[in-house]
Image 1 (cartoon, each protein chain N blue to C red):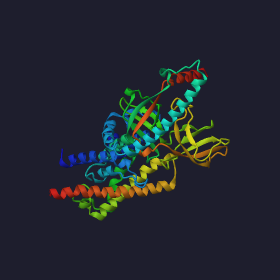
Image 2: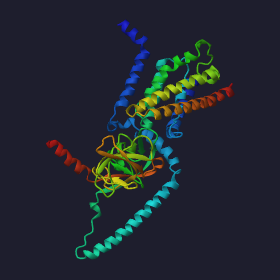
Image 3: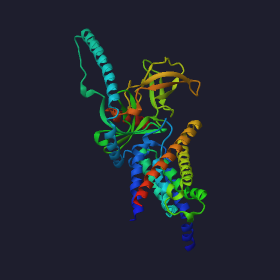
Image 4: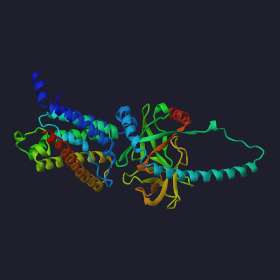
Length: 173
Length: 282
């Protein structure tokens, strides 16, 4: 098993534990929920096939679902996110062959591009998960506030996690 | 045949996407929360262990508040005991000749103490996980309360953990009434504020005032009559003109749940059997 695989397994378990035990219980101002574990889907290597990304996404989402009693909500959203990852990165970074490091990060893509990419993915995730949750229970204004607030929080968490993990990389170099 | 395999290979991503979406939707729209399998809820063995570890840490955080609540409740109960003793003395004097004390073995309800190891208040369908399960005598459809009032109803049990449908879950409807009157309505959470719920379908001629206490009606084996639920904040007009709806402030503070009591009713099986017989005969 390569170093990258081990890193992702370890980081994935850590982030899911954090999500389940800490972030699921925090709703900032009653609206904003941070989804830190999708950082894994954001930063999986682009060389990995879509099938693998979707499989990892589905089972990560399912695990979080089981812990949080949300029954398939995270699984669906993660699968959609994993499927849309490549199109989104193509949108902001059309020349894929120029990317030096296969794992998208602020270091490999440059901060502005990575920020746009992370914000788009956060928005997609929060949009799907809250739309799915509120299907039986529609209240447009609350829904909108929750989506926007959670997107912002998730985006900040992804940027923060990214700066933490990539600073380690630099030290190693 | 080769074409078929080629087709599958070419569109494998789409196929896989469809499979995962269908699996996800199946879980999601398997809408009756009473039929979930225990493995796919937070009552399964792994998540119970994880939550128990986290619960051991966080159980200390709210001790002060819980202590205060207990003191208050204790004071109320003590006062009630004193009143009852007084009343008992008076009655005893009245019926001096044939005093009969009730046997404690005939008590209908007993409590199982359990600790909350996972809880949420920020979703539309909230659930609570307890650290005790079927091995401790907890069965689905038992009522759960804490020192302040109603918490929820047990829904799935593992051997050493149980999942409770929180009162803050709009799958749950609880039959309640205004204390001192017999008009029954059903309490349901509207998904907005974890401190408030709505008592719906109260008959138009029901009498109430702001500040009145809402208690359970006892029309099921889940909760005995008279478990406190909350107080009335204001009256609302229901969707249907024939009914009142009341906004109720809940006694239970769902953000600081610690130890709860699961209500075991020794007559559950008997009542259920009787009710089943009636249905069968129809």
